[in-house]
Length: 485
Image (cartoon, rainbow, N blue to C red):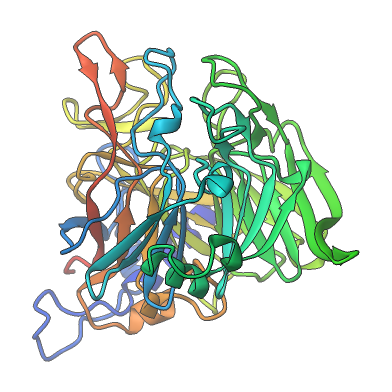
């Protein structure tokens, strides 16, 4: 198929699915807004920037809860019974690259487990016991959730509770019962011990990974990418990259749970990645997940070609490489992923992070880097449409088509979907059929929590001034807006 034709088809499907149920600009109008058809979509033209911009747009509104919430980045997130749960991560901003001041101090680790009730606007937190602090205070651990079970492994941490700096990668795999964990935190840890909510605890070098992604498909777990950084942080020094998709399952041997049935798909060229975004696929056409971005290439840049991952349901992962080069938001960031039951496509919107290209407010154009500095913090939303076979198509949200993000935000943050819009039996996917049946012209799809916020695109010492970064204390409501015809 001709590439330009494919791109046009993906673009048409993407816009048609998202816009087919828009209500009128005045939500009280009696008549529904006419649906867009293919002829109307063909009239959509690229912006003056020479890129395709979003014909709909996101907005982000700060939400002040009537309870304390933490400012964290690179944490573990789960949700159960209407509650949000946050574990580990750091309480400060970007670690920097010049060791001045030395990064990854133990004192900046999040040593508390937080439970937040967003509906009742109440929060609880309790400090992790020292016996589990090396595991549950780690930063950049891999995690996944299946119903009431939360699975965590790896993460950069301390070798013992008294170490002043992070100096190793955790080799522990945990299964945690979320209902029991919520009860533990709500009682301030005064009931059953924390170990009682951990239903499995396994040590294995196979899961000694930080900056990777964890998925569960059927009885198999997959640990994708990442590295083993087994020393105190030193600028310019990298850990041992896995270069792999590692498969394993959990089995009992002699009364103990162990990591078993291991196998690895190794590709030192295309899987030499960490700190990327791995999003679920629709599960059709052997298209189970997509790996977007990740760092670092031989030129100390981000990878721009997505990796389509298949075969996860059979335990035999396969990969193919997208020929399209992603323009923006290649580093771990908050993202929202959409799919429908009718199409073998996923649409992922990335909310900021760290980027190959950003929007320059002075010139009003998309530029590579920040005045020669590569991989700046991002101020835009990008959306990538992928079919897992032929390639991807990318749209950017930049003025005048839509507003910029409310700052350089999103890196190591998370997107929390509104439960009513999640796809049944496909955790982490937003269901476009449900969104399209919603009558809200300004559709509240979720929240953006935590991550790094920078006062400028390049952190640290710049020719102009010192640019600080922080763990973002602001919680945002995320809206998907459907502009009038």
